[in-house]
Length: 502
Image (cartoon, rainbow, N blue to C red; front, side, top):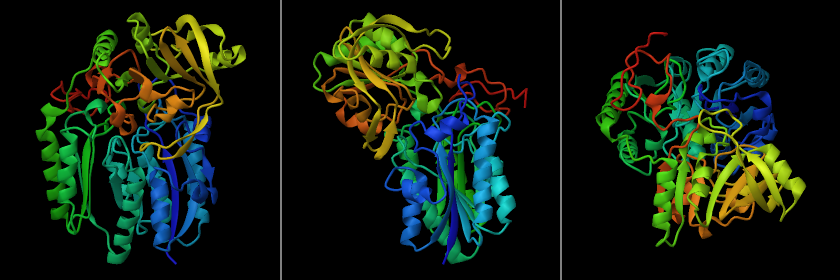
């Protein structure tokens, strides 16, 4: 029987963010399933939208025997601590060593991990795995569309296969595609040629959404180029908040011959570069965005949804800035809701006071973001929750969420979801669990950039993007870059990096 070692270790690192990812963050998961070991991986990673779950399902259909090691992830943040990285990788490597006879290894990684001691987290993981399994055993990896792919990652893996949707509704499908690619390697009995192209400009995440052009069209053409000659072709727009030389967009192809792989990679790279002018759009100030939303809402039958993009916990924010809340209250917004504000102390105070009580709080604003501060005001406690619920929408795909003690607080006609754990607001259930029905609101402010669109776009009158203070600037050129490779433009048509510290 074909025997495959499997594991997962996912983190997207914003090196400019305020808070690092510790071992405990991976134990909890923060929107990912909680850390799981050994045989339990095959029980937990099932029927949900993550790469490992899709691979497991496809592998079982093929009759493969799986040797699970560890599966974990944590909310995007600043660097993964050295302690967390080394402990997790040791468990993974020890599991591969203990698995006995293997025919291949499959890993579900993010592709944009930076640690306290390593620029290229995934490159190091793959190097250590390759050292254990030797040069000949196939090593296939599913990665995020936001991967900052490095030469080391390409060198050590037989294939990297990236998501093609943002919002990421195809994570499990990418795991299935990885199993299918591995099966192709088994059937052919030989390796494929690799081609890798790093692109010359950073792409802000707000303009990477595959619902919109130019990205939608790029992925359609990419899919059409995939063939028997080039069975795997990926475009990763990258995660443009990791200050190291290999940050940025890339294209990678696997073909029967080097010429075929090179031709496909060059064609997609030229397509992306040709659309450099199109990775752009309108971003509003908090007051302008709220005022426009209020104007639209007067005649709307569905909510206007505002992305609080710069405090997106899916991009390293702490989900606790108060700029958009202040704008809602300052402009006397009606039937408005904002979530999720991460503030365990305020959530605990609401639970102690009880439903119906009025509490004086210094809400949010604790992550030290410039231009932000706690919002000091009186709030009415409308609803309490222990924070456990299922998120059934297309992005989370039925994951069990654990937000900890949570509350719905009201100030004026603005309702606030407050939690004790962080997770990107990408599912309508993240309002409903504290008693807010999102479809009945005039304005919804979500701490997300794009993932929310999978579940919220069908109910939205209009979508707006606002830039309140946060850890993930919508304008990538505003970040204090020092270590990008020389010549890469810090945004589309932006200034090239000097690369002086590289």
